[in-house]
Length: 141
Image (cartoon, rainbow, N blue to C red; front, side, top):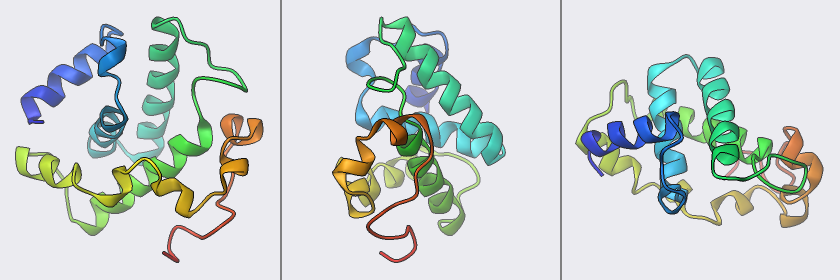
């Protein structure tokens, strides 16, 4: 992915014209990265949270206790991305920083299960509200 592709992805995401098949696992991360590099983290969280909910509804999905937006996953990965940006000293995105970001271990689908039991992560409470990890803290791994 290039910065040019990222700009197009974000335009489609924000206008809810992104085809559902392009709303991939990696593109969730790239979208969050975009906001985390452009806004203070509290504002980035609100844009990510609102954007996912709006996009889900635009493709016919629902944001309920059983489906759609997931608060714990969103906040866990937003914090992970923010920590990555701080430790890697990334202030602006380039093709190179984007490429390096997409190689990070935390983009692997099961990464979050190092910190959460599947039961807790898939619970209704975790979908609706932030739940702290029950297996390991974010800084102990």
